[in-house]
Picture 1 (cartoon, helix red, strand yellow):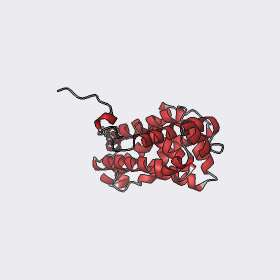
Picture 2 (cartoon, helix red, strand yellow):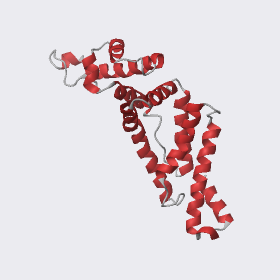
Picture 3 (cartoon, helix red, strand yellow):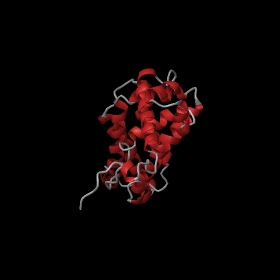
Picture 4 (tube, one colour):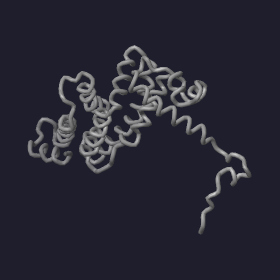
Length: 229
């Protein structure tokens, strides 16, 4: 069967077909311009006027989609990382968490790492920006991380009373510490070591619960840790 290659205008009697392709093109241009300018100027010097000019649109077009500069900046960064930061489901909580954490490490070590520093730095005096960061970037990934840990719980790798937020804050807090303070190298080996230590500790707790707390057999704990890793 031959597919017609007529232009959209001809297919609709010379009129523009339904939909807003120009608007979507403008939206994508705004997002690209935001990331481009943010790398050059930082958050404080970045302006909606400059973004609009670079994208070839008016300020009103920018505000049609985003209520503030902070919302736009976080949205642009979140969309640029969306396909990279999903969690797999390999059947091992350690492999799944370590995989995603190392993908996040790749983002932090790329030019986009400067954007994360700019957002977190400016957010210390801009509560609205931090809220946008939590809402548009942190919470969606956090929900995926919860599901990853819950799968580990269902498989018996982690204890049922596990504090999910404590685990995630420990895992990712260790990454942010080295990323922001730069007192030591933030590497794949470091990320893997943190992930292993935290999840092994949780696995030990799960094994202790099943074997009667303090009376847990050491070999049973080691076998359970091996299962997690």
